[in-house]
Amino acid sequence: MMPLNFANIGEENMIKRVGGNPEVRKFLSNLGFVPGGMVTVISENGGNIIVNVKDSRVAVSKEMACKIMI
Image (cartoon, rainbow, N blue to C red):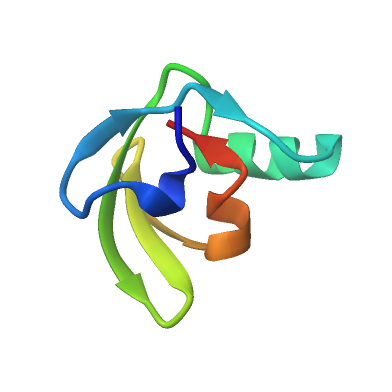
């Protein structure tokens, strides 16, 4: 298990765990980051990570990406 910010670009990964306080977990869950879901890193752009999750493109900060374990 490793944080999302260490994932290779273009590689599809399964989300294993979402950490953080309850507010952060709810925010990430609303974006589609749920255990068992698939996520693909599209690119990194100035401190943000662009990912494909649930057929949507989402940008998350590296700080948030550290809370998403794959």
